[in-house]
Length: 292
Image (cartoon, rainbow, N blue to C red; front, side, top):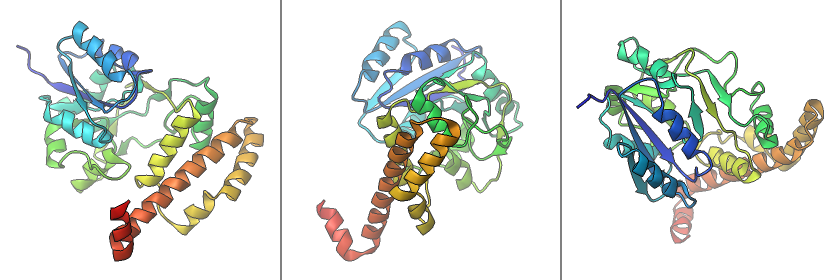
């Protein structure tokens, strides 16, 4: 029996469109042996059906189905089922170069660092109009998911030593930047290393529904500070003004629709988050929230 060095843990929620390609590229990685664990996070589409088919063809894959609990909680559950000395956390809407995992974990296996990530992350659907708008809105170069000048050291990660992850208590199950919180809990700075050549491709939101969902999550989970300035910036009037300016500048008329949907969803998420903060601190609001 081979010793498992690397465990890949995926949390998948309604990824029927992407999960097959994701798993196929992970099953053909250059590094062996690899343990592959997929947690279906309460999907309502065909994700679980596709995972069951993969399990028939590749019995060594571990698949689990949970009710919807958000990505961080699903990943933490996957960790409890893993055995690898190094953990890799791919997203279900990614696909990967054959040498992705090998390059990502090599510095950890050699003991040089405790965590790694990649700056070689590209857009998997660059021709989709909403994907293009997503990059414009995020001030990213066309076709790239990270800036060209992204730092080579940071506290985000895709791969991490098991001992480090366990010591940190896993992902924080509240908040937005769950990978950053793991290393922050240990009180370390710039513990992650960007590994060159670890190439992957990520699908940007390709429908307005997905754009809205991603923006709402950012607002409601703490990805945007609840400051007066931010409430003004993402207000409808200011949003339309900026959308029109950027649409003309970039020659992308659809950006007006994108920006209004994104900002309104983000603002809604921020308002919901603010309300529940008030509920926790105000006895009357807390009583009202309990009845909702």
